[in-house]
Image (cartoon, rainbow over all chains, first blue to last red):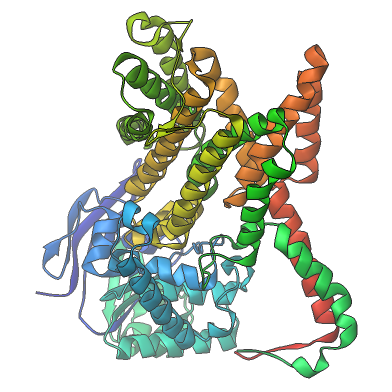
Length: 256
Length: 361
């Protein structure tokens, strides 16, 4: 039984076949990279895994459970967190609140008990604040924990989005192009953090256009083209695969 | 870590720090309302509380007392809608219907079945909340304009039902002779007593809302307003959160309706139409979205404005409209929010000039 497995997935959008019979597996505790040209169906696969869309056919299972027809919030309860290609932080909250909102499911309390601010709510909020500060310290944002999140730079907002996912204490994180729009220094820092997260025992599935980063940090790489899986394996082997070079790299060699 | 060198703080700095500090006592900081606070109350709240307690004693004018009673009722309505509209980011054009349901529940229970007003008060909120739950479950699946239309429809249906159900509601004429609100034999029979009753309820509900906003529920509201996709992927049940905000807004309106029925001693359908729904939305927008004090300020302001304009009879509506347009142009995100933003900019401008902040990452 593999950790996350996707089998024979087909996804149609009004006659356009975005994914055509894709099967892949992610083992526990690794960084799995997913690359491919624009429109290859990478983000679509993430939408399917996180439950935001339903596959037309096929099977998705996480820890042996069929998650194909679950709602996004149910899937997140199982321990799957994700970030978005189009940045989705909550700009109307502070930085620390963004992180604490990520802990939503781990905090107990309903509408009435929260409104009455019962003792255990107070205690849990305090603990949550401390925990959020720890996460912010890891991300290097602790100095600005009370800032409105909208005032962070683009790169910092991307980091914050990862922090929000970490706050869920997930087992699997889906990162959708975390390095897009970042400077080389920021990309290096990000790669470091992703490795640290993996070393902490969290599995990472990453879609990325930044080849250098994927080849450097990923333990395994899968390549999509036109909604199909064309190669899978260790980064250096995939980088040398003629089919990959043909389809994605347009003849250029990858410097792994 | 932000390190500020306090040695560079000089006497001259008090020139702007002291006035701003004084100003900060009275100006609400709506943007920061939902930020985590170490304590529940701050000096500002004490200032408001003192002002509220003393106002009717200093200014002992019957008309003013009555006006503030109505402003308080509108404030409760605006507070409830603020949670739904300002925080959870959903629109409702039928909020007045819950107000009406509260008023009619109290009217019917007290006049037909001789329930004490205190029991009717809680029953009104329960009935309004239950109805909000029933209505909200299906229509909150809608978004934006469609939600606006559905809630508008609900408001109109409510009016039609009230007008036609003569047996229960007295039709167009309404119900008369609702007793004063009373608690353990103490009747709130003057405007002054009602003033304290209603503002007491308002403060209670405000504290409830403040607690809600700084807890996980408040964060979920804001998350749903900003991005439903992101909210659902961290495990927030978007439908449940929206419904919760709607039900709480409905319950607040139920409380307000019950108090309104006791204060006016009548309930008739004219008071609960679309006009009122839009007025409540105006209070929230004028006061500022995503904040709790603003809508109450908006409620006081609009209640007074309508009262003052009442003198000008047929010209009152055009003048009213003009004032609203001018206010929305100059304070597009509500006067509370706008003033606060200016304040922050001013402070940070002066602060930056002399004292360099060293930001360590």
